[in-house]
Length: 268
Image (cartoon, rainbow, N blue to C red; front, side, top):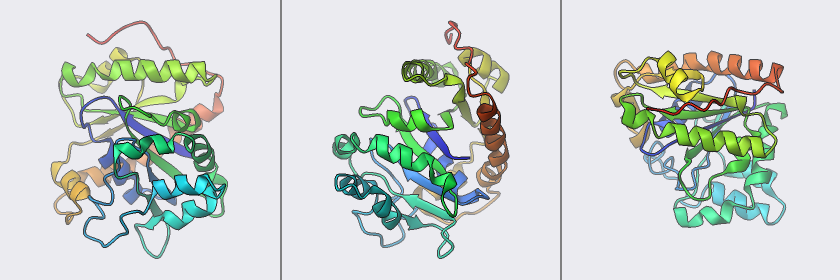
């Protein structure tokens, strides 16, 4: 398995928290890359209790890319979340949306590099937290290279489900225009609501790949760098989700020419 990109519609459905939960529970070696053009939260959140260089991360990789030195600098900028084992690595994102335009020339080369990390020695899976798709300077090359694009949503009401339809439509349209079958799109449900997963799939014409619980205590600890207490349902479900993600990617790779049923139906 190679590259999994996480994104969302408007609001804060929990994509970044899910990405971190996956990273902390993945069995295979994994790299979390904060690719959100609106700015990353890792240094101020989960790693906020540690003394980390403020300039560590993606922006330094982009600067190295201008010197044709992206691969070497990438490894230099990573933070070992499981030190010294280097099994769970993270690349912090930019600190301000004003830096997003700087990343635009780097996205294609970074996406190609990340998609090849499964063939490195040792091989790594990659979780790319791409933030909300509504933002300017979206990292489209990452969606093009990703083996699976998961769109996060909280199915609490029609108000939270409806904005996902235009996001999926935009992703499908862009992938098709790039000559890429859009069947690699999937949904990441967080929490529950009046709609069952099958109803969500029918409304959005997209399969539910992962369903995580809405675990406020664990999510808050991950976002703010606090101590993990209680049941840790989020982490347990994130660990279990790895198998579903792998099965989905294996199925997609076995049918590279298959197209999803984009459909003409709309939410509502």
